[in-house]
Each structure stands twice: as C-alpha cells, then as structure tokens.
Length: 326
Image 1 (tube, rainbow, N blue to C red):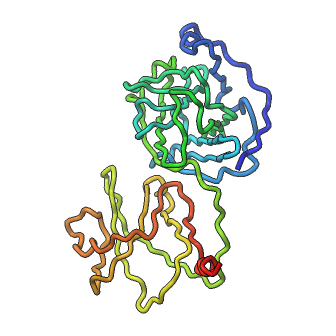
Image 2 (spheres, rainbow, N blue to C red; image 1 turned 45 degrees about the horizontal axis):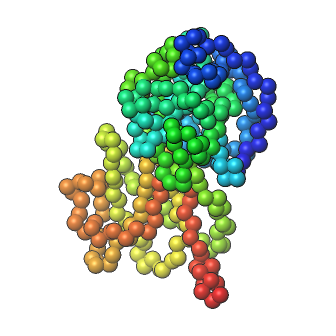
C-alpha cells in the first residue's frame, strides 16, 4: 500500500567543512536535525500504518517497519531507535556482511547531525554515495526514542546499491555510541553490528474468511532454553489426539512468544510417516545425541515459515472440490 505523503518546506542545510564538502563530491546531503526533534524534509507519517515490522537486534534497540508500493516500486521504511545514540547504520548486503554493503547513515559530529546514502568497502570503511537514493522524509524524537522515516526504490541503477527483489534480503545494522567528525572516520569493525534476514517484498494476498466449522490446533515447543550459540535448530515431536479424524488444513500461522520475535528465524512443520507404530516424544536440539533415530521418519514438509512472513493460506476443501468440478 502506497502511503500518501504531503511534503513540507525543508529546513536549511548546514554548510559542511571543506573536508566534508570534498567528500560529498559537490552533493549537499547533510541535514541539520535540531536536537533530533524537528520533522525534516517532508511529511507526516502515512495515513495507513506500516503493515510489516521486525526487530533488528535481540535487545530491541532497533525496530524496522516498512510499506511497499508496487506501482511506484518504492519501499518506505520507518526505523525506531531506542535510547540516546550518536547514530545508526542500516542497510543491505549480499550475504549479510558489513563489508561491501549498501547503507544509509545517521551520525553526529557532536554539534550537527547528518543523514546520507553511503556504502562500505571491502575493509568496512564507510564512504558517501555519489547517488543519494535513500531519501529522508522525517526524523523526530519521541520520548526516549528516535523515529526515522525514509524511502528507496527497489532498483536504483547505482552499482553501489543493493537490488531489492522478492526473496530473502540480508539486512545489516550498526549502532554508533559516540560522535564522529566525518563519515570517512567510521569503520564498521568498530561498531556494534548485526544481521537480520527478512522478505521485504510481500505478495498482496488478503487472508480469506474462515469457514464456520474451522478448528484451530496450536503446536508449541514447551520449555525451550535458548542456547548461547549463534544458531540452534530445535526439534519437537508431538502426536495428534487419539482417533483424530482426517482434516483439510487451510491455513498455517506462526506462534512466537512475545519478546522472542528477533530470535526465531524460521519454522518448519514435518509429517512423520507411519512406518513406525509409535514415536517417542522429544523436545531438544536437533543435533542432540539424545535425539531418537525414529525422528528420521519425520521428513515430509507440510509448511515452512520465515521471519517476516505472514500467514500461509491454502484453498479450503470446498474450493478444491469446486475447482475439480469446474
């Protein structure tokens, strides 16, 4: 859905230093934020709320929301930054590296604050992009958080920019805890950085009304203690109720415990074959030595969910029957 934005007069731009002006290649991109409170270059937030949102870091310091216009091939981003920060880095890269990344930067030199389209080289050094394709629409301080509203086309034809397509996008982020005198003084190796994977472009499919006789079954992995390792695959086996009749599944929806949204990357539902009369209950890491061998019979994928995805809807049996008759 395309948000409607009414542009307001811009604030005056500060005059950059000689060194900064040289690095900007004559492009005026520095934007002065008056104590990071004033709304800049733009507009009120969209009338319609951002339908997609995801925490970028496990601590919840950075929250990303976005809205997609397929007609104009533009994404509007809203980045919420919690707590007092000297700046923030957000962007995309091919495999989630901080090197050779397409970035948007907000940073301060202690007196003034700047917003710019940038990129990092193979050593993590930040450089100003000669083509400013990220456009800042609004920046405002609300209580103890900073909200940034900006937009960018799917494709910019800039070789330094990431091409946004309808597959998984590796989002990178960084938090600046202290001022920097220039953009070139920033290297990603000295920042608190991280990676999040998400599908930015979503098919515009509405959730249909459910039949009156629909039933819901929740399958939850209980008492999961999240290990300190970077990646963990967790397996949980459960049985359907005794004498459970045959049903037609029409929708899957992920259940993630509140507060863990940034930790759960994907889920898969597997069906166990009937080659064994009974399956032992198991709830633990998939690579555990205590994992039962009969878990190998549970390999048929029924559904898969990834971070940022919405509900998975399949036709009801009545719809399937109608299509067959047609």
